[in-house]
Image (tube, rainbow, N blue to C red; front, side, top):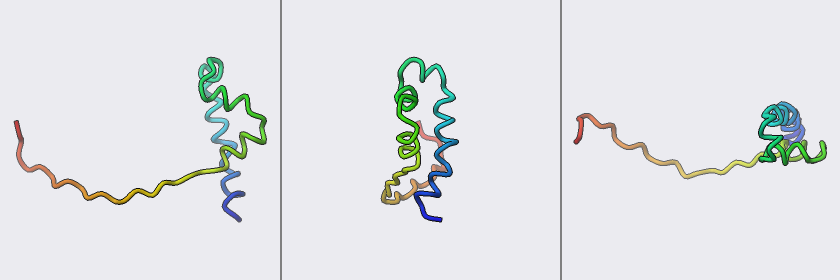
Length: 68
């Protein structure tokens, strides 16, 4: 299965989750804008994911004493 078709499988539950916030849809927040999109545009939007790779950071040394 290719990546786009795999992500499309998860698009419908994600769309349903966003549209479940009815008060946000009704007041015109982002879920409302998403609800106003044609169904094919919603599916394309939610079937696309972006990942940002961050440089790993070192973890700070644990504190062994209380400080004031």
